[in-house]
Amino acid sequence: MEQNRPQWGSRAGFIMAAVGSAVGLGNIWRFPAVAYENGGGAFFLPYLFALLTAGIPLLIMEFTLGHKYRGSAPLTMTRLNKKAEWLGWWQLAIAFVIATYYSVIVAWATSYSFFSFKLTWGDTPQDFLLGDYLQVVEAGQFGGFANGVLLPLLIVWIVTLGIMFSGVKKGIEAANKVMLPLLVILFFIVVVRAVTLPGALEGLDAFFQPDWSKITDGKVWIAAYGQIFFSLSVGFAIMVTYSSYLPKKADITNNAFITAFSNSSFELLAGFGVFAALGFMAMQQGVPVNEVVSSGVILAFAVFPQIINEFPVANGFFGFLFFISLTLAGLTSLISIIETFVAGIQEKFNISRTKSVAFGGGLAAIISLVFATKGGLNFLDVADNFINQFGIVFAGLVEVILVAWVFKELDSLKQHADSVSDIQLGAWWKICLSIVTPIVLFFMMFDNIRQNISAPYGGYPVSFVLTYGWLVAAAALIAGFVFMYAKPWSGSNKGEL
Image (cartoon, rainbow, N blue to C red; front, top):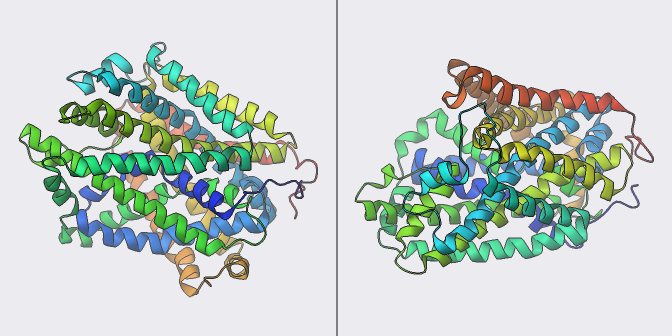
């Protein structure tokens, strides 16, 4: 199997795939609001500190793990230490859950790309989103399918699985080489248009105006680490899997720096675009910028359509550019998420890639129908919160503790990274991963648990949060152990190099 392991066609191909994975919906709809709420321009100090002390060290660690042990997350963890296989499967289960609902958000963006031409959302985009398009019902109810979501969801899965069937080089790499540059060009056009709108400067001023008093607030630093952690696709098997397809001679450390800074550059670009547009909207409505700031689904699918309505010229065209950018950002990330469990299933059960994509991707596609129902937005909101906070963060914390403290592998990984990289890792790398990162991730976990115990998430009924939040996060962890003991490694994958 090792001899037949797929490889990236070029270094640029790998970097584009890694950046494509990191640049997702969160860069556009999460980062600007997080930065604004946590000190504006002052937030960039903790953000840069978090990037250098957690983001890049974690990325180097995962790139090195994948490159050294040359396997999917479960196989890599098994080769690291036989007792760690469950961690790889847990991370795959997290990725699987994310794939089921992330695909639905990409489907919404696809729909809205076409809605843009006729401004189908009308004068009240939020009412259109929740009432006409998603037809949202009470939490806990399915309420039948939201018909407008089914066709775009089918298209998303056909495109995504078509890319997956084509393999690493001809599928994932080829797709990213087209989609990532296209995303950057189209989104850049949207940003240039946004910053030339009246009121844009007020929006940018609100975004960059530093509130230095917040620098002493611990929550701001936790928010910076959280943004870096979620944005870079670390902690849930993607970067381990992608780096396992690198050739033997690959500059791991340099690749990690390029990937991380490319991702952060796109986040900054998104901040420019989003806040220039919000400044324009605030001016049109005669209110301060802070009254129109939002994030997530509402920012993308309610606030932005409202802004597009008020564009002085070619609003349908710029609406299309914005939503097709969202679609591309979502697709490049979705591909990477699916590749994690496709690779894991293929290696553990020694089956062909085609069967693995059909089984893993097909199952994710079927389960995604839950989020295409009229109750889908509620299920999505709760599952997303818990699988992120108690899946990715917790798995990331466990991964760092096992590698740094339990198996004491940092020296061996550092030696491997240094042997293939131009930039040599210093003591900062080990200090960050053995002390700084575990402490920060632990505080993130502790704070999340405290908040969720004090009040049910999002004001939802407790039973709903338990079933579709806590239970989903716990099921991913249990799945890790189930797959570990399901059967021994097949074929030539005996868990050894």
